[in-house]
Image 1 (cartoon, rainbow, N blue to C red):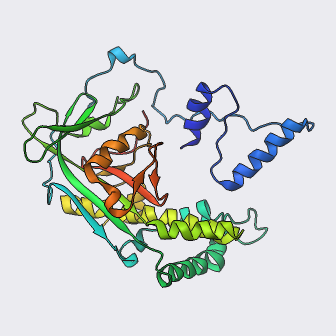
Image 2 (image 1 turned 45 degrees about the vertical axis):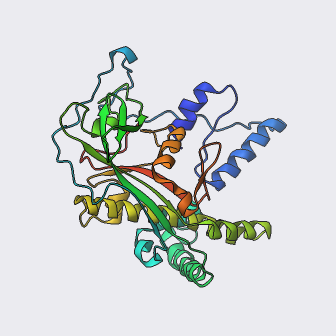
Image 3 (image 1 turned 90 degrees about the vertical axis):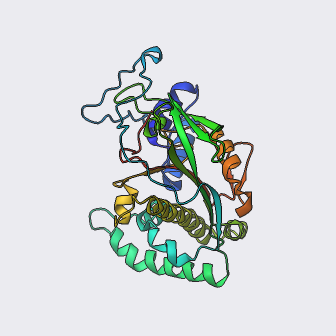
Length: 341
């Protein structure tokens, strides 16, 4: 979810009030404002909906659906890497030391734990809070997670032959070459008219491409431990453990993304900052992202990988359980970046 998606796209299709809160703290302020309005407090009002920011040179003028191109200007002559294997594999018991370096401290401390720092010198700065509270608490939690054996880091991933056909990505059977399943992605109606399928060789090109899928999880123990803290009203510990578990899941997913890129031969010595900003060759997309917003596509991913082997199930709402799990489609094309449809 992004503020623009919620306050523009969702607000346009819902009759009631729609607002975005980036974290629990903003959510509380928003609910305070909502209750003040409801009670008729003088001058009370909800914050205005924010307009979508448009980058210089971009346009919001939409191309009619019937006039959309079958393919964008994405290069079709990039090398197709060789997959180390075709099909799927399960990896359990991934050591914390292997993915801990991929933990995004800023997202953990500021986004999950609410360490903001004072403005204008009135109180400790964010960096001072990181040193006095953030990193000491992080070390404590990481030690506790290992001591209490709460981490069950596991991944199921695989490489699959594929071709594209318009907006569709067709997954092929590695033995017969027949269609196994297909994903249909939306195409931009502005700018470059990008679609995820464009990053793969077209059917009829004479070449077969390759795509990777993965599901990473921290397992159910850490989710249960966070639930116990919540039930005990230990809210600070709950928020810290829950937030850390979510970020550790992202760290594991990013670590495995780097491993997939390495197995494709397109990985390098990029920093974590480069990976988080996607300043790398290849990109990791999760269903629900703007480029592939249909959560229903999780069903096909589950058919391909069978994540039940690492304890991950799919709910009726196409959400992953346990919550500390994430899935992804990985593209090797050098032009692949995040984009909005």
